[in-house]
Image (cartoon, rainbow, N blue to C red; front, top):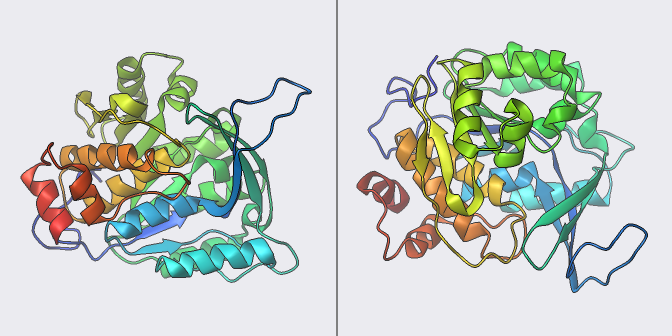
Length: 339
């Protein structure tokens, strides 16, 4: 199955939405975001300039896709308690459906995110109910899928001791009509080989940042890492290697690496930028754009996101069009955003 848009999957002309949805096999958790001048030295301390409690994790990808018009479902685990209640309320506010029943007697987990004056972010995560997937959950996800759905997997879940084997087994059983997308995440080097290998074998697309690309290939150079990862995955799988302000390297399935420049902006918060890129790319593929136009739109969405404070800052179509003013998008992208 090709990672390119399949004209037979869902019908419709370019720019028309498919019948598919984004189904996230990830983790929606609560983020405690602290803005600090810089990370303190070991054993030191620093004062937060401001602190916010928000829903994050996989919620950021779902929100970015939903705001650009793609129906979205959260198919991860969630608990019982104040953090879980907040996550479900925020999912409902964004029009994102929840697939699984809540887990009793354990709350959803949280992440402390430090954002420094340069916009860089550093995390520490406490696991909760989202890290307790079961085989019964996997069966419920399989039953909820429809033809044309796009399934997004996070490397965070694959790294969790309980979730990893369940997710690897689930991905191997996904029907052929689903397209599978993996964001390996910063814990990619901690995912057991027996968990990661079957997921990579089933993926239609892998989207990672430069650090993750280096962990997967041993190469620091973005172009070289993108090419090496594509060669490792084989001709049926596409690669997006996100390069921050430099845009991204796109390797279509069976194709050659192509550099798509980013937009230079003043970054105030990079937290969630990769998620905005991923969610926008999926949404634009869902609108039947070709992969180059979808990646260009994702670059712009990520650039927009880093100019806003908070992790879930992907743009709406109107916001993205205004952001692109003076740098006109392709006709295909413009048409999709205006629908």
